[in-house]
Length: 260
Image 1 (cartoon, rainbow, N blue to C red):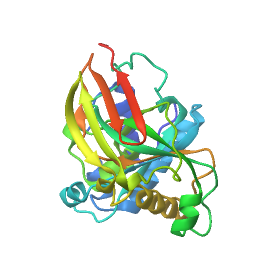
Image 2 (cartoon, rainbow, N blue to C red):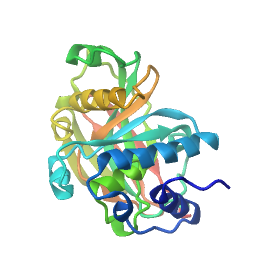
Image 3 (tube, rainbow, N blue to C red):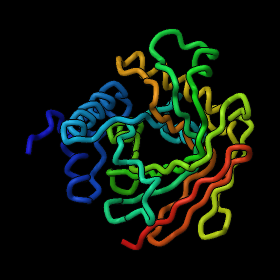
Image 4 (cartoon, rainbow, N blue to C red):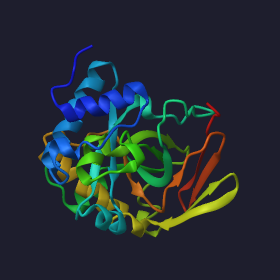
């Protein structure tokens, strides 16, 4: 099996293959070197695509001001969504391949147009086909979630899996900034949030991503899914738990996890 060019990419790949969390990679690329971190992410993305995975969209992370302050950054980050990360149809979702997972509720956008040129607010808004209620299962290959901005970017923005609900709502019917969210585990509410918690407005998060992706030469495309960022605090995933999120005006999304 081919080895990675970057030692940081190899460290993260080995953690994935062995299901054993690794040391942070910031000692290899620098804790604040965002360009180097995205280079590692691209190398791991190319490897995953070579092994048959198909890119279906992106996820946005670090949309909370509190989390940005914690990591010493002033911008979000993003990762790549692959087809094999979509576990919407699985019941239950297996936990055996996850290392230290957590779950959060988000607004997902499905795009109807490419975002390659002008990225005015009107253009970004018009590119959205529908909104979908979503759950993101995040995970870190870095032991103990001991991450800097460079660690999480290199590690595909600490991504793992995602679940899309069945509801579809257009922007003509609902403003994402107005959404209220409740996340429950086994019937008890454990997390609440609003659309404004996601970079002020999930559409603002989408606009940021569109610009970042375009500038890196890999723009957002029609048909892709964008997870726009958490609306409330994430919670740890435990075997056997049932999770549901309700979004005012948008609908619900639910999943349950297996015991292995």
